[in-house]
Image (cartoon, rainbow, N blue to C red; front, top):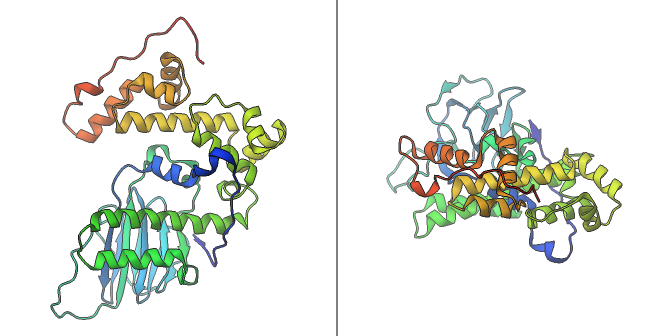
Length: 351
């Protein structure tokens, strides 16, 4: 469990056409596989719930009252009005009004929680505790290291959220969940996306001041950030370490050493990983032809792309697409438009 006491703002330098590329947004977009869920939840003391693992990133935000969150390991965490408990991997956890109260297994996880209907004006006893709870469906089969390396529970106390953009997003989200108004579905999606990005910003800003390596530091390192933006801006470009070092304004050796230290992978290894991640997203989510996917991620040879993809995922691209569609459709057969033959070995090699 990690607690954050304050959030600094550290600007990230960039230049030229790379200014419009946002690595954090790019990563979250690539990992998202479904619609986020949220609800306004009320509890009356005494209460104690034990929530199962959600298989999704989840959150609890206290609006009123106090309660305790029980992580899988470690000491319970006191939550007060304005506090956020973010669970990046949706770990099993407990929630209760008392540190010593009993916990009852809940049949609902943060992944299955749905927006509640706005309250009716009928009289009812006042709630002791009011919370915003929800979850983000992210692809856990290929989690980006930026998100995978987050701790199991991130606690952001109220002083960090009050009178900030994060606090404003919470207020707006509460208002949307509290009233049924036209456009609320689109508004909730936008606010939940903003909430997730603000939580991650707070975490990475705080950790950048306390660490010497990792993604929190990398996102605040001008040279590494420029290289990351180059990779994310043009993943199909044939980037070399020398080209990326030139973008970063460092010597080849210095750049390679700094990138590997902060990211945990050499530059070309990360480039390949990101290319395959983007390719998998296309194969899973749309009907882009294999040859087009191959070109988009830097392969002029469809066969070379299929070989690299199989090395990464254990199956050929066409089979991956069929498996993904079959899983999504349940017992239904995949549509004929997505059934493709694997490329035959060409005479020429990879680009």
